[in-house]
Amino acid sequence: MMTLKGFNDSRLPADFPINLNDPQTNLTQFSRLMGSTNPEVETYGYYGGHLFASIDGKKMIPLLGIEGVGVSRLETQPNGEVKAFHREIGYYSDIRTGKYIDSWHNPLIDDTIEIYHIKNMQVNAKLAAINEMEFDGHMIKVPFPSKWDFMGATGVNNFELHMELPTILDQAKWPREYPGPTTKISEMFMRQFDTADLLNPKLDSIPNMGSWSRVSTWFPWMLMGEIPGEIVFRTHSLKLRNGIDDIPKQLRDKIEKEDPENLVAPLASSWGKPNESSFTNFLRDRQPAPMPKK
Image (cartoon, rainbow, N blue to C red):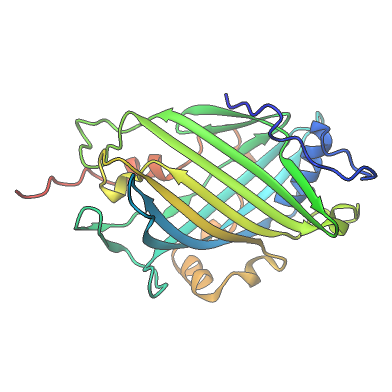
């Protein structure tokens, strides 16, 4: 279980009318930022940016572009906890042209490989004083609260997830995909918003923009094996005020043509069922890559 003693204490103005250091109050306001406190409303978040390789002794190496969208619906429970129903999709692209691609020449291993895009149909989570989320068969527990900071008319919220889990790949079966015995994932979300929106009780959903950063073990489809290093995601993000209508045309056209079900949040009946991730879905959909010819 991750603990960050004192790290998440919010810096609030002396006369600020909302005590965001109270865990339940923090959760309620975070829900407005992440999604909507109206359980009938689905909210959409866009992200776009680049992937880099971080290898000891070398500068960051640009690899791919990434663009996607997530859709969420939140249900607040009588005890104050929140059920978050979330679905996400993302497509990798040529880092120079921005066009989506299905195959890619990995310069780190000098091999052309088949890309495995992000299509997670269910990434549900319970939000509470202790935030719980199932990931690859493990229950991840992350202490609330998230951290808030204010600079006059502008507010900033930061929320982080740091996970270290046994890898789900068998080395003997997946020699080229196996990244080592441990899968490490850190995800960092920053959301910037107008302070006035937070203080407006009439708003169920608070508009915001920010960033999503991720540092993790190599994805198995990259065929990096146990080469030392990590993937670094750097993206900008935006809650879409007009929902689907605000999704960039290239992205919306591709989703509506190939994966339209990813534009709707999971049903309530999905609660309690295993979540999906790029790792579990890869094992479900792919076979081990053949060893390179000598």
